[in-house]
Image 1: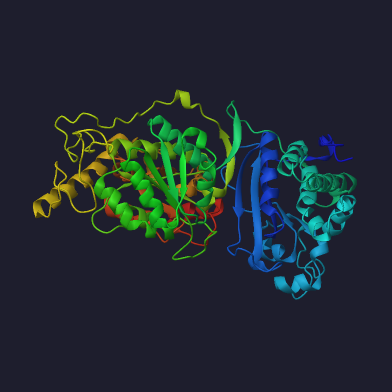
Image 2: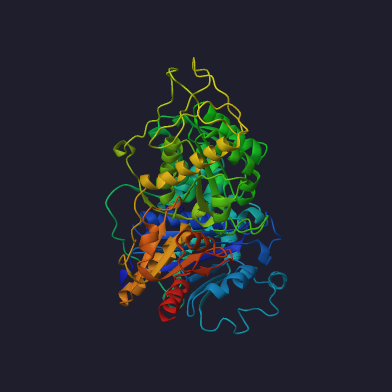
Length: 623
């Protein structure tokens, strides 16, 4: 029975064709919401839709069951058109308990659909969620399309033949709901069934129970008159560039990009890290890539993690470390050591909402000051930012290139949204990439550790143990050229100038900045960085269609800034800077170019909506 009717039946005549849909799955953190979203994501990608996702985790490790603090959510925007964001407002909310409804109902668009598990709407759970009356009965949900299903009862009925306990049986309800949603959108179940069989190969009873639940939810949808409630829909394939695709998260793409970058440099990669939300997936991904010569080390603390990476770079490998804002703060002195010793180092900062512990599972862009300025002394380094999950691959390669060519630490900024979100990725061919093979010094003739390449100002990279290249290295100021310890005032001025000029000179080695959309002059420029790319892109596109004079500029290189950026920005009457902090890039732009960059800020732990950027554009054009 479990293998029957795997393909969604053809009911095109009963389905409403729509260009895109936004679904938000929500429930307790133990309800398997993230697995549900991930499976729907992969199935949707196989159906040929473009998509973007937003996993929204609770901050508590295990909040009391049924409370609003423990609500986990997963939002996906998918369609037959180009998808830039996870969607402003869900069209459909799947709420597996009252708390999930309480937390997420305000996000749902007016007139949207709600699928609820009535089996969880008992007096105890309603009280935990903060409801005085049952919202399914008090009229507060009037105006929405509601499908009320006792999922708990139905799933226990579906899995009773497998002899599971009630607790184990209820764990299958996420797949029952997934089967129902697959029917509503005409999705194929086969990939999910194959995944379950592989996932639970050692527990076939669990696999069979989840498959039974999946099929039961699907059959329920077939039998119910859903066209009279939430409806049945079809979403066509998106027009995408031909090639081999897979869904990828930012954490995965970043790990693969670091490996690709080290291979293009001809170096082994060493990754020293300490677990922290939301940076840990990078360590998890890299630990699976030992076949590419990657060494991973989970250190006992943040300081040990970065010092091990610096040691690896000193020994001739490409040292890499990662963390989030609090961990980057702990690494600060060691980052200064890498700058002083002028060794290549890639530092990944997966930003989260702060300060201190802040909102550890929510997203923010508030570490730009920390990245550009946040060290003792004049200690410049390169700062890059990825703008989306698949872009992490390209930016990681660029970080490896600049770190090894200029013998400098590079800070690579991502954030919780980018790291956990997924999108389709056209898998590149590394064979087509131009290697940037690193030459490590072997000739002792005329060697001094702080002589410099006249073009890049990079010092030579001499691996310890190379005959005749013995040298002194450390955090105390070095004499220009010889590298001997020096306390001379004039020498410190010289070395400070050299370290600064080396980093600023990298502006000659990065592309000139061009508008992503719009003209290079006009009334308004919307300049952003990082994960604001999606909402800014869609908002600017919408305003251009309205005939507005607006352009989108998005920065990958945050320090040094592109050489032509100042002149480009002065070609616009007004410049606004949407960012998820209290106005940090705005400050950098004002400092560097003396322009009146206007901040558009948001620090709610949630990404920008397209409408928020559109409103900011309209306001800037009118004032």
